[in-house]
Image (cartoon, rainbow, N blue to C red; front, side):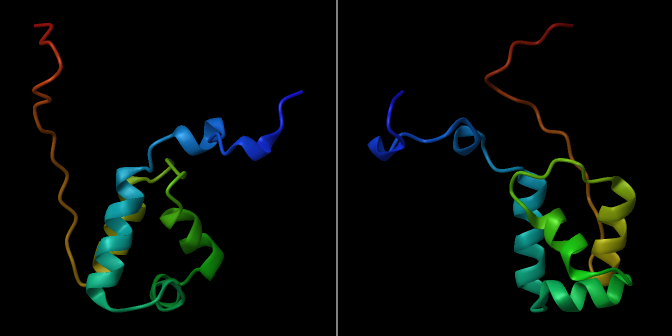
Length: 90
């Protein structure tokens, strides 16, 4: 059995961070508040908010994103952009 000391990344480490979580972290920093303060504003416990900010979490709902945006004094904007590297199948 190979040793884990060879500094190879685990399969979990190879997964790219969720862009929604990264955007939430950016917005929180811009708003200048903590996750605990956001949790207070949302009326939930801080661990619930922490889960949304995890780079491995992918279960964000539009409803929760709208509520977070409002609590941060922001608005939610959803965009789809053309992937120049993908082939069109239309």
